[in-house]
Length: 388
Image (cartoon, rainbow, N blue to C red):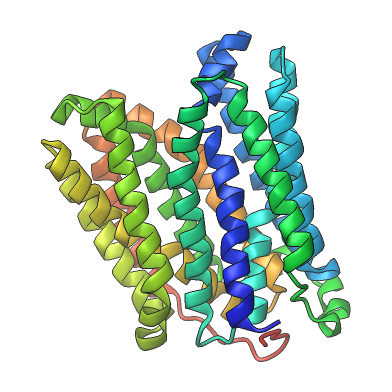
């Protein structure tokens, strides 16, 4: 399948997947509370999803190396659709937990498979652009999804879950009809002999830890900025929604329009380094927030830097790993999930100690990631490439 025809289809698919996921974000806490969840149970409900993704993303990545990208992606999207439907009809807390566990296990197939698909259909020169397209779709999905969920929650708290389920089934149908398989049969016998952890080699392992640290610092910011913004600038929930929407648009534009050009001109390493420098500066600027305007500007600066890191790291991993593309991107998604499990708890604790600490520590963690990355010297793989 040609890159020019495949990437727009993949963009639409991942956008719809993330819209469906984003629809339930503003509703789930209130829905769980309505069913009877206390704050601790709500925290567990959120964490169990990320835990399942941590465990199963590498497994699905390796499965996609063996049987192909399209069937695994369809499994992941079907899992989301079923999970959303079960949540919509849930009347007890245990049903919500079952739905979140099912969703976490199956939907963990989506992101690593999408990134592996990009690696299959792009040359190494154009891979950064392809990964940026997936990142842009993800970012825009998270911009529109929560807004849709908030609007339809006025009908009932279960309505957004039904909408998310229907959206996921429609996406599944589109994948079945439009998305062609990208995996080469000639690599299957080779991939069967490899381990998930083959991607975690001596030099490449640093890339996974870089992604862990970046994800950890980002999720710490996401978990605490609402409190920080209210304290420092008097921001309410509506203003915060607009701020994160502006940040999301900025990040999506950079990922979809600039990442490919930058990586093609300067290389993945330079783009990752630049992204971390801008992210660290963004953390520092957040400490100076005092109004809606400054919050929007400073968070967008942070988002621009942070937004180019993940697609560039994904691109570099698929270029240097001797494991299958799915195994490498699956393991990367697992490290990303680990950061999202640790980050909110760590950020909340730091905020309780001193309300500026999550952003000071975020800048420090990003600088540590930058230093670690300087140690990394990739060795280009010489075999097993599946580029088209």
